[in-house]
Image 1 (tube, rainbow, N blue to C red):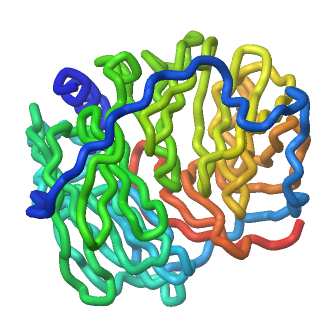
Image 2: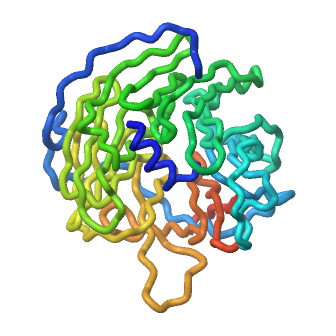
Length: 371
């Protein structure tokens, strides 16, 4: 697992606890597609209809909030945790040989009503809100070059202080998510569940499902991991879907892309000739659509995947793009092209990280109007 952490760290550039740890023996593997509920493989999703929206009107911020590393919306939609690099030379277009300074990578809270920074929590990256919004988790950043283990911090928003620090041995730790107010995280092959009452290992994933070239990513609700082996978008690969509570795995073959839904643990799987949505109960929905390396967004409820139309060769780079749904039909939803973000819970705004490759990435907010 150490090899996996070091290899992934080079590509990513991203609590010692005194409580007792208990071990649950891992379950054996299961093979094949998830089949908890018998389904017609061509079944269509029964999600609510999507509303046509034009989310291209920018909202003026009182002051620029730039050098954004990552963003996380609070459950109530009133605040955002922003990871920022406060080094004024970060994202400079001039050659910068200095490693990133961990002390200058901070977590800041943004009030989405005033669109201003209201608090600086201190050093941290990859902020995540708990289900109730009471807690915020984040990793303590490391310096440049070969990095050591990183701490995973739990911060109590109401108390405005750190309440737990979990020491992890694997520096990648892309696997961390909140299941309500319980933090589920991967450390090596062990799946931990932290709660205010303690931290325990609830399963151990077999090494066969975590080879060195894999990078497991946990679902938004902390219930499952997806690990595509050697996925780079150029060819089909094998992948594993792993239950966090048991360590049991399902094998998927010929995968071109995996995406977790923004809520729950619905999984979008793209193959050369089709797309599939796998619901939490195992129901499989299928759409016959050839694979295209396009960005995936999720609908305001976090359940339906939305796709950018691929750019036309030789055409000017568009300022906005209209999205299509799971079945390839136009949605009438238009978003800015250079913004990686999400809709707020009531579809009034599209909020994200704008980055054009030339200037430091910054927070952008757009008003969504019925189209």
